Structures are given as structure tokens and as C-alpha cells.
Length: 271
Image 1 (cartoon, rainbow, N blue to C red):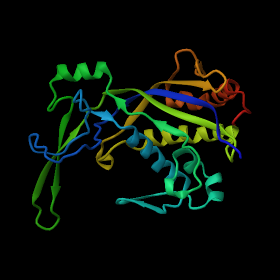
Image 2 (image 1 turned 30 degrees about the horizontal axis):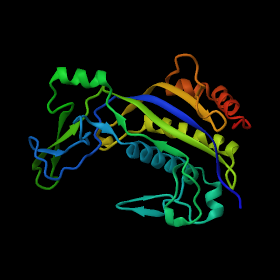
Image 3 (image 1 turned 135 degrees about the horizontal axis):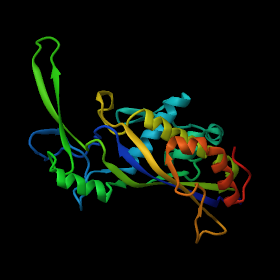
Image 4 (image 1 turned 90 degrees about the vertical axis):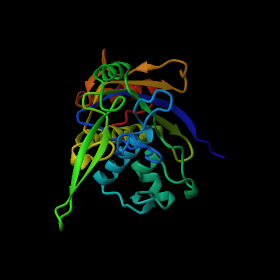
């Protein structure tokens, strides 16, 4: 009986800087904070806003599905996503291999990409304390809905993390496997799909209210490290000294980065 075996992991770490106000919704149930209509999600221990890994991962999956034209065939709540419905399609699908399929599919392999929750940086948290923002660590943005029939105005207030705040270090972990239908060289080729997803994110928005100006983000101080199965107790840096200042710098250097990762994992170059 064939087995799936871990070949190694790629650790992608970076900071996320808000270029416009960021709204990732929390629970509004039972909350009455100065009449705020939509609150942000907060860490229960620090009361600071954070970026859930599920929001980050889900957004880049959604953007990648639209970028590739993947069929939206699985309904999740009020949304639809792409998921492969048979084993043959799954074996060829970068999206489902990277982000996974529902457990009931019966033919799934280990999901390649993990995204951690991202906390607000200590420096940004301290800066916001000193600024004495509308609410702890956040601002209120007032929007006015106009009834197109009566012209009546209906103001509402949205809570956002202000522009200029840094969240980090964000961490995404990408696993490569071999055996039982898995191929580590193919997994390495698919890692470029993750980078493309992050490019799409920078050009789009994170969280809600994006069509109204919220959620523009920028990735900075990017580092890439690798742990191989043979040397899992140590990590090998694959980025230049000091890392990549921004995502475009990583994209420009991707061929060299790909070669370093392949060498560290002792697999064929993934390009």
C-alpha cells in the first residue's frame, strides 16, 4: 500500500500594511458601541483587531479561482466556491491541491497551504494607543445610504483599522508531499500559484467594504525559509540577505528563489 510522505515545508513570512482602512467583521451580536453598525474582529485577550488566517487564505483562494476561471460549483452559505468533483480533475487542479476540498469528497490529499492568524504589531498597537482613536485601536467611518425614491438619508457607522497599521509577522506554511498520487516537484511548481494569489490580493482588497475604499493592503519585509524532511530541525533561508522589501521584489527574483528552494529540498527545479 502506497503512502503519502512529507518532503518539506516552505515558510513564507511577511508584514501586512494597511493602505486604507481595514474592516474584517466580528460578531455584532449583543454589541452596542456608540451605535456602530459593523464591528471588527478582535483578539479576546488583547482587544486588538487581528487578521484571521481564514480571511487571508479564503480571499487569495477566491481571487485565484476568478483569475483562472475555475467553475464556481460548491455553495457555502451565500457564496459559491470551486471544488473538484472527481479524482482525475482533482489531480490536475492547482486550487484544490493547494487549498483543499471538502472532506466528504473521498479522494482528497493533504491540503498544502496553512495560513496563521496575524496579530497587530506592537509598534502599531502602541501608536494607536497614543493617538486615542475613536474606539480602541480603530476608527469609525460614517457612510450615508440614500433612498433612491424618497432621497431620505440613512447614516451608518463602520469600524475600521486605520490606514498605516502594520500586522505581522504573518506566516503561511506550504507543504510538499510525495507518494500515493503526490509529487513534490509538482507541488513546488504550484507554489507560484500562492505568490500569484498574493499579487492579486494587493491589487484587490482584504476584508469587507472593498468596493467603497476599504481593505487595500501591501506586503513587506518578506522572508522565505525551508525545512526539509532530512533536516527538519533546522530551517534554510532562501531569500536574499534582509529578505524582500516587497512582493514585487520577490516576483522579480522568483526564478532564483525557486532554485534555492528546490536545492534545499533536494528535488527537481519547480519551474
